[in-house]
Figure 1: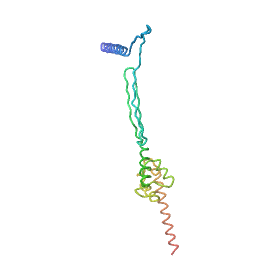
Figure 2: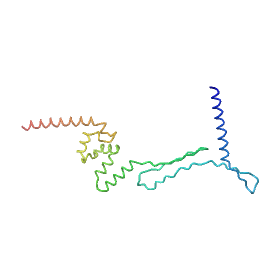
Figure 3: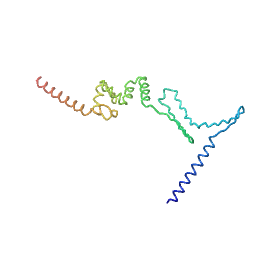
Figure 4: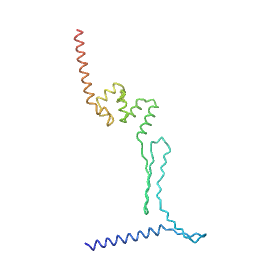
Length: 183
């Protein structure tokens, strides 16, 4: 057992000595100048250059990212683009709105939970299957699962439905009383 450990350690030291000697031999450049008797040693470290990702057109909703890592022996670089889906949604909405389809443009924006919540809080609910205004509000209350994930209606739907049912019962009772008084 000790014999195997000793051989492994010896091989590791041998590999280290051989590779460090090669690295020094490769990195050293010696040049003599004519005007003096001194020797100039140039030990410029290697450099990893990251690729430039140029995104000049602001109409594509993408951002370029690149990075590089360099050690004394090994270098690595790479790059990628990232798509901005909110930017795409805004551009699509503007295009559809510009074609005269205003409700479709608003419906595209309403896919974002922040826009959906803002519209709901403002009393202008997002369109629902072609319905707008109070008809859309009533449909959203019936089908809160169709709203964006995390929207207000998903949290408040049970309370809103209970309040609407209570109001409907009160209105029915009021109509019955009004009919009795009219007779």
